[in-house]
Amino acid sequence: MKKILVLIALISCINFFGQNEVYEIRTYALFQSSNFNNFNIYFEDFFIPVLNQQGIDNIGVFQEVSEDLPRKIYVFIPFADMDSYQKARALIATDESIQKASAELSPVNNPIFNRYETSLYMAFDGMPKMVKPDNMNRFFELRTYESHSEDAFRRKIKMFNQGELALFDKLDFGSVFFGDKIAGDRMPCLTYMLAFESLEERNENWGQFFDHPFWTKLKSDPAYKDSCCSSITRAFLTAMSYSQL
Image (cartoon, rainbow, N blue to C red):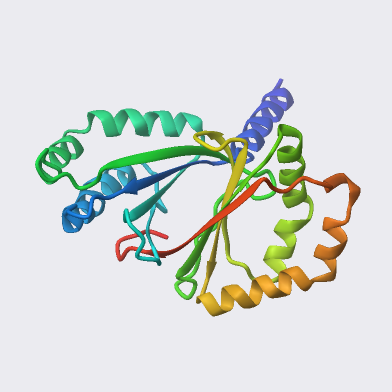
């Protein structure tokens, strides 16, 4: 009986530690007249601390390098699993400090943002947990690949899991996370984030990637033919002073 109990406990531990994280990315579009100071106060002093108290850490808040309008702010929230996401969502909707701050900092006559879009992702099997970048890598690239079919999409994810992730690591791409979108717009698609020291390092690393013999071999593999992509979009980001990434 003891052996059976030990085996059950071992299997439970394996399942727990083997879980893929769940990610939420919120994209806030601000008005030109938005009170940016109030926006930062809301996230730095209320939103992030409340989630941190629930064990949800490494929350990233980023702004675009470009000055395009409308101004966009990206909020990245990692969850251990879907249950953690659901509990956090309920907490945000009911926490008195968050609700009070939202009402006071974003009044109807001067709201801190126009609208926000949200997307949910399941971490890739090849990188089931996010990796926090070091203090040197503060230039971020957020990339989204849209696919023309479910078949192409699954093969592209397999291509990452069985080759591209390892090459990114070898070339010091500063991989932060890779996510399979499970809810949101432009599906099927995947999104991932890379961290570099600068735009110059980013360009140099991508140049090495495209010229690398392993990439040449991988992309010519018939298993991955026409797996990418109907559209590729990217955003260059820098972290806010209070961002935890």
